Length: 328
Ligand SMILES: *[C@@H]1O[C@H](CO)[C@@H](O)[C@H](O)[C@H]1NC(C)=O
Ligand SMILES: *[C@@H]1O[C@H](CO)[C@@H](O)[C@H](O)[C@H]1NC(C)=O
Image 1 (cartoon, rainbow, N blue to C red):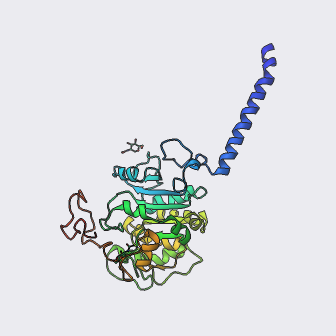
Image 2: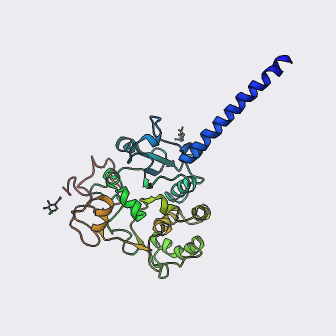
Image 3: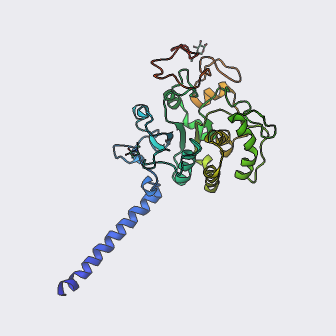
């Protein structure tokens, strides 16, 4: 009895002190936009240093948002971009540190989930990519994702707001879909075209459905914080609700998103920049020989869209794939 009364005051003071310090730290973190304030976010830097102490081009300015499947080979990201912050969404593993509510709509679901969860703590530039290093749609002579990311000019992304990670018009430009003149072919492109207008009206009830949609394939892009926030968070939630509900196949729903992202990010419905200008502004490749749609020695659309197994050690020069060094 006696000790209790005697210690009540000091215990109270210690508790008060502790509470005040906690509140102060919390407040401070909120001011600095510390990622620890966001439960869904898993920081991926390893050395424990705070991003504020890092240099101008280090984490904080940019983050990768990676759409992946369990088991994808992603060592290349750590090897070549080890200081970049990465948000690796594993869509088919509900125990992964970052995942999606339902694995639907391919990369569209993790991309939307990132935007919704991170809406209030976005970096200057978010770079949305697919997990594998070599993919036929990478804007590189050997379809390699490393030079694409290395060369990406963040200052340009901040200025333009949105850039596709591709400049060549092959696939998607100058027109991919004409929502009011749909084709009757029985393929995914036509199914996406037919569904486009009604989905557009549902997602953007105040906007006019565009008569022509053109944008670079294939759902890899970089966006500034300001441009993402030009749309309210509700807009992204509405798109994700549609994606969760739709009966369309993943092939079709993801294709609709593939040709809607640029409009979501307030670019014109046909966003097909002059190829040479795009290579120069987006990637700093300013001395290429180009026409409006392509530049020499940059990219060619392969005949087969599945990368040969073992690329680039195996496969170059066979089956319509370019020889190694063809662009040197
Ligand atoms: C899913 O992710 C968890 C956490 O990263 C991991 O431990 C587990 O092995 C993964 N499951 C499969 C099937 O790979
Ligand atoms: C630009 O290209 C021209 C012709 O291909 C070449 O002569 C010149 O050296 C190049 N300049 C630079 C800076 O690479």
